[in-house]
Image 1 (cartoon, rainbow over the protein chains, first blue to last red):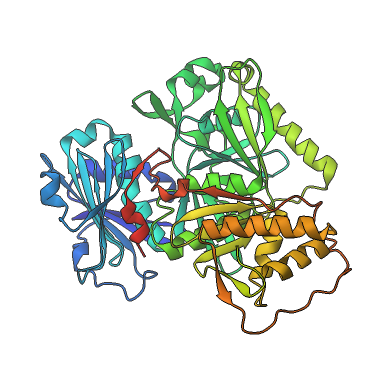
Image 2 (tube, each protein chain N blue to C red):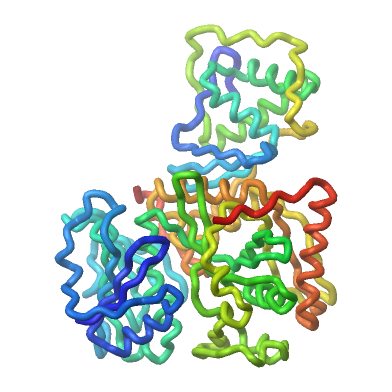
Amino acid sequence: MAAISFEICEVPVCFTARSPRLLTLLADYFRYYQPRRESGVTKSSSAPLASNWTQGRLTVELKTRRSLPAREQLIPRAAELLSQTGIVELWHEPAALPAGERFYFYMGTAAYCVEPGRGCAEGLITRQAFVSPEILANTYTLFALLLLLRSRSIYHLHAAAVISPRKELFLLCGKQRSGKTTLATALGLAGWQPISDDSLLLRGTSSGAELSAFKKSFHLSDELLTHWRALAQLPCHHHYLDRTCVAGLEFFGTRRLAETRFEQIDYLIFPQITTHPSSQLSPLPLSEAILKLAEQSIFFQIWRAHTERQLKLLIQLAGAARSYHLRAGADLLANPMRAAEILESAVEKRSARASPHPTTQR
Amino acid sequence: MKTGSNQVVTKEQASFTELLDHQEAIILDLETLHYYSLNATACFLWKQMRSGRRETVETLSARLASAFQIQAEQAELDTRTFLAELEQYELISWAPLEEPPEIIAAGEPPCESLPAYQPPQLKLSSSLLHVTLSGSSTISAGAITAMG
């Protein structure tokens, strides 16, 4: 069996598959982590149950199938439905087996069984799943990996991250379609430095907490690409639904910056696309902002010890941040430079009250 | 509402984290996965309850009046309202007071790091009860609360 392997936040990760097409797709998706090709890899299911969840590499074994078995055949009766988002179902089977607890993702064209105790997952991928390769990698496969990473105390945050000209870290937070990518792109066009348009990783360190970009393509709406001519030079990868995957880190020259580990968040911005003629920035209580950010963390609720730990890490990172709600109006969509002007006004107000603390980086 | 013969006991599973500027805090109830944001006054009262001392309605009211330099009547009214709210959310319970609580001296100096007084405020959020996948809205099952 062939494989690709790489490290995320110093945790070794390995994807195995017989399908060269699948491995090529994943090697491209994780290209910023410099995946290495391996051959002759043994099956992950023989891995012993880890005595604790902090050892060994994470392995995801992928198998291609013509079609998926019925859900009832894949998911045991003892499992409980935890969540359903569109076609994605997440099921949990309590730890009755020697292998420990299991999680099942069932997506219609792909299914995954995740065993955090063994640090492994197995995925069944149908031909139909290859119709949207970006969804196969960025949603289906990523969910299984993020759940395994969570068991190793590496937590996902659904937010964009941009560095201001003053070297302050701005997180752009909110649900899908709230405007994170739009705002990150607008700021990038104004000379700021976007390092992620929707995904970050959070973890504890011996000295506190650190945040880094989850390095991948940016997913821009086709509307934005048409609207802002300056984006015409963007190298495009895939297209799915109404989104285009672009090489944002290369375009904005932030590939090296995306390696940075941050120990402090300076601003939390919650954008909302509106039809108002002018954009408006208004303060948001920090505790509300942190909870809204926590809401956007995938699997935040799974495993109480991790839930508590993640919240404390978030507060450690963002406890001195300023938080704002940005109602993005027609002025911002007409002129991407407007985004930077609006956010700079918040920085100026803060500077007028107290000297800004520099963003701590490592 | 209990009186001076009972001491307040905070819920063990209530994980409290104060924000860095001491103006706000968050309580995460690890049993229910409900989250609460607290203003500075609520944060002050919660910390008194978690101080390890025996606290009653009367001692908490006295500490509030002293720290924020407000009238004793207002402090007691606001403390009782706040404790009733905490009790409603099962974040506190009451236990018989076996020994008398510490007497709070009137006219203690105010705490300088505290902001201007506002009645204690507790804001409930149950939105985190739902498992989030990729930032989308979700349907959650009650099963999540039973997970370890």
